Image 1 (cartoon, rainbow, N blue to C red):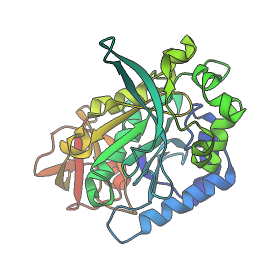
Image 2 (cartoon, rainbow, N blue to C red):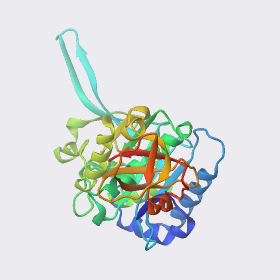
Image 3 (cartoon, one colour):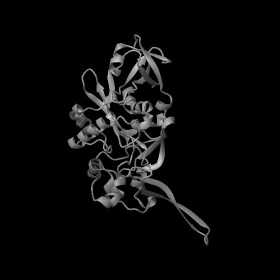
Image 4 (tube, rainbow, N blue to C red):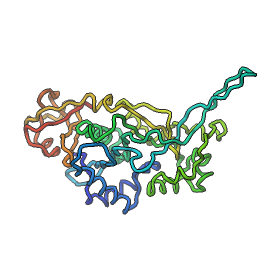
Length: 338
């Protein structure tokens, strides 16, 4: 049995392993002991915060194999993007110019530095061990965050966003970064990505141009990157699209990967999940698979479970499920079908 739970300080060594294996471009998960320790402590403080309101909190979750104690993946919720400093991205929209004398109006696509997405809830740090890719457990790592939001909606914004890793080649080079960012930072993509992970995005606003970048003036390889998803990020992207997220006009500063957005109350795991009263019931293991979670804050747990009977006002769980969710019979359980 594997369960999604809040990160603990004792997870630091294993979290470093996950960070080393993460996809290049996931800047919220970097292999740096001090950075990860601070992230864990910040997450613990966020879960411990009694005031139920939206603030700067980040809620970091890890997928643990309960038999071996091994971590198999992780994900994160930043309650408010840009709370302490602006959350920068590039806005892709046309610049319209016209001439009355010639009766010509022309639109040129441009990229402009902006922080329009500040104050929205950001889903980030998705990582799953490769053997679990394409399985329900990958969905648990991603969608479990939405079950947590459903249980504690007052702590989050009405809109969620997620930045999807954009294209880079097998050598870790981003054609978009080479055409844009490297001219202003004089750093390779890998080094710039790590600097952002460690220090945040503030330096980007100081060095990036404040005027629009005309897309047709970029190299064709860079233009082709805009809004493209890295092949290894397609699963993370598809899970969110299936939830109800959609691409926007915003792309990432580094690799021009797409930014997805969805209204929280319309996302599938929030809109369709239901809370039922639990009771003991043997399960064959052959039933339909569901995502299940408890309704707790610090003690949050979420699992994948096969149920012989679809939940209604009550939900039947076997002893292993009760143990994984750290619940007793009669306590509430949130469920949504896979």
